Image 1 (cartoon, helix red, strand yellow):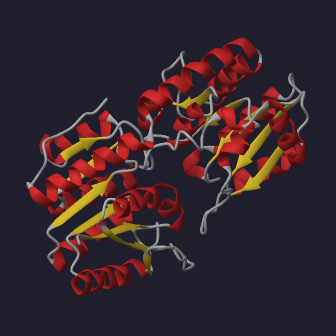
Image 2 (tube, one colour):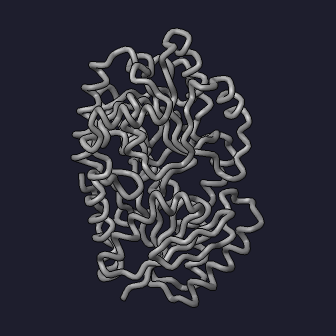
Image 3 (cartoon, rainbow, N blue to C red):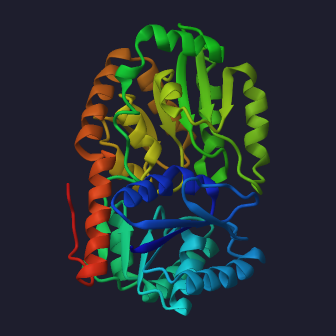
Length: 387
């Protein structure tokens, strides 16, 4: 039985994006194990899990120990495939796999720092990716710009790249289905959250930190509430350990009861059903998985024009794209949708259709499976673009 190790920096990444892939691979007969970082251990049942001192900051001293532990683990378990995710785990995992002599090393680039600020971070990311590319059998990407940078900056040949049509592991279209939530169910859910039926609910799903641009969204909502007092903000997510974004906390306090927070939730579809539109103000995304889930739930979106958002949103059809970091533009786009229910409904229907055509998890799993089969049986597979 082929033994595969999946490696990610945070348990959150593992739960949201890697576990569905691990489950699909296990169903196809692979033996899958997981290695992850973060401050707290987590049991990824039914899989064997290894908690390592991996941290998101590339400068954290624990990463040196994590590299050693990963190398020893790979040598002891003799994996045929190591598949790494996220920048720090991606770099350390590939270095460990090289030292351990793992025959096949795959990397999913969930998002890049090329072209972002501060410049030192972009430069560091560039160095790590260029070097790690030498130890990589195959790379999976979610947008054309990351694919282009990997080809030109890191000299990854086209046949070593697979461009997936959606981020993460794709969307479970049965779970993210608006028909599961009839109007009476939505009314009850809203009431439980303290939201009135007459409220217009702008939703956000994700980590509440600086990289995600949440402070820009809070400022935009505060501006809009002067003219739309029934506007409410539903925040689904929480802060990650080590985040020092004091500004977001202060802005949340100013909004008071206008903002409703749920923390991280396992029932995102139900919470999305309570939203009138979904907003993603992120500074960077490899795809913008929340946008694909919102589309499946028939919700129009407003998103900043990151690399990932431009792949997940058809501007003017399934949602609206705005310049990154522009509060005024973000507020204007939100206002356009909250003031026009007919446009919201039209965009929502178009978004659901897009999700059915492009974002289905089964499509993503079949592409991963084909790539794994090619890597293990036939060497490097031919490049694919299945949409």
